[in-house]
Amino acid sequence: MGVARSFRDLRVYELARKAVSEIFEVAKGFPREERHELTNQIRRSARATKALIAEGWARRRYRAAFISKIDEALGEATETQSWLDDALDRGYMTSDQFKRMDDDWSEITSMLARMMDRSDDFCKYSSDTDYRGIVKEDSLEADDSFFNALDEKTP
Image (tube, rainbow, N blue to C red; front, side, top):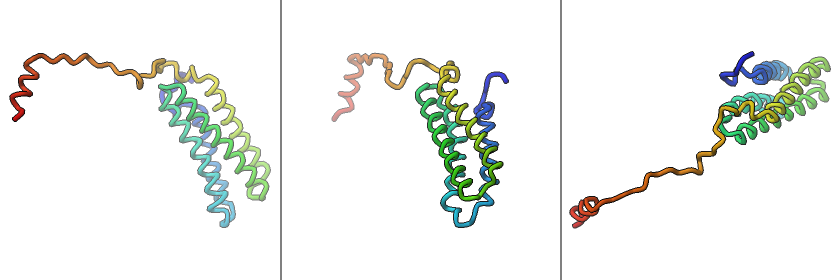
């Protein structure tokens, strides 16, 4: 694979997208009483992982912002694994389903950790300068005509 031109070109995003779809399919079989607890939580954390990868990609101009978003994605992915533990412990999924899904989410977390470790590779075309603190203004030079014009307008 060549240079990624979009977040959709990232292998971690592709894997997260697949893993989110699996979460949604498996969660359809969770009991109705889990709808507002486990079902919503696992879907939310899985979706957030994918969305934060995309957002991190968009913010790679500033290395710290990139790392922050990827770190948040890592947290959401790990949270998803915790919800998978709950689903397995309550018998809502088979151990084979759990192993396959947990392996995917483990791979996602590993990829995200490597992205943070190699953030310079992702942010190498970004500026090393934080321009938010730099203000460049031309000096304001006023000649007498400026002040005369003001005096003429003042009653």
